[in-house]
Amino acid sequence: MGDEAVVRTAALSKSFKGTVALRDVDLTIERGEIFGYLGPNGAGKTTTLRLLMGMLRPTSGRATVLGQDAWQHAVDVHRRVGYLPGEPALYGKLTGHQHVSYFGHLRRDPDNKSAARLAARLDLELDRPARELSKGNRQKLALVLAMMSGPELLILDEPTSGLDPIVQQEFHTLLREHTEAGGSVLLSSHVLGEVQRVADRIGVVRAGRLIAVERMADLRVKSLHHVAARFTDEVGAEEFSSVDGVRDLVVAGPAMTCMATQSALDGLLRQVTRHRVVDLDCAEADLEETFLAYYGGGDHDAT
Ligand SMILES: Nc1ncnc2c1ncn2[C@@H]1O[C@H](COP(=O)(O)OP(=O)(O)OP(=O)(O)O)[C@@H](O)[C@H]1O
Image (cartoon, rainbow, N blue to C red; front, side, top):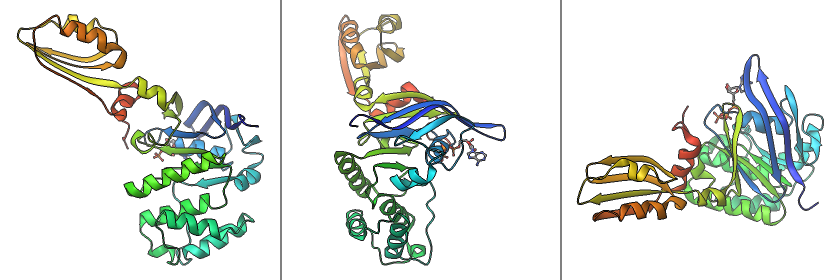
């Protein structure tokens, strides 16, 4: 039981009248992990999540959620999964409490205590009608509804959109508590920054294809450094470009800047110290920059 996959897709594909939204996606999410599903707008994230929730039928391939076929057993999957849609549907006239009671009954689990606790953690008042709530507070209410019955798996489409940083942090703590209690999480985002502190692994989807799956810990090891050096005399680019792991090299007269992987630093510094150094700067790039250098192409936030 312990290590069984909670999500498994095999060559999962979906086309909408000629538009290929998703192509041959093989994705496995293990029990107990937080998986960040990343990609620019239109990449296919929502389509994937809707396929997992049995709301769309695959054009080919299949998706299994908690051991059940997502399309054939959509009702069971819905009962066992906490789902936050990209655009949560709330009832304008109903208060937060009324939503909790209504969705609790639908799930045959009107666990209001848990909802109240979640709302307090997220700093949300449950006694106002949904139509009076700000975008961020509507999102919080939708999160409470997705999480309140303690589902085994949370599938969350852009859950932090509209949340301020402090609430985001609390939300991440809630997700961690969820996995510590044996639950699993799949959450989508279009920026790494929103998931990098909380995800165990990330998958990158681009134009309908899953182009990379990576442990966050491994991405950190691959992290890039900015290196800048000034020398007393002119230097040649080839001295530095020959070092494995050096990229974005610019040499102008007596100055050199580049990006370098951690493993390239030793070789690079050996080349640097062959000259008289006037100034040297080396700083780790943030993870977002590393991520974009490997997978980005600069359009991570494109619309
Ligand atoms: N019901 C639909 N009918 C036709 N095309 C669709 C439909 N749903 C999605 N698509 C198309 O499938 C592709 C993937 O869309 P999807 O919503 O899955 O992307 P996304 O990664 O979730 O993007 P976003 O971050 O903007 O939500 C897009 O080209 C989109 O236009």
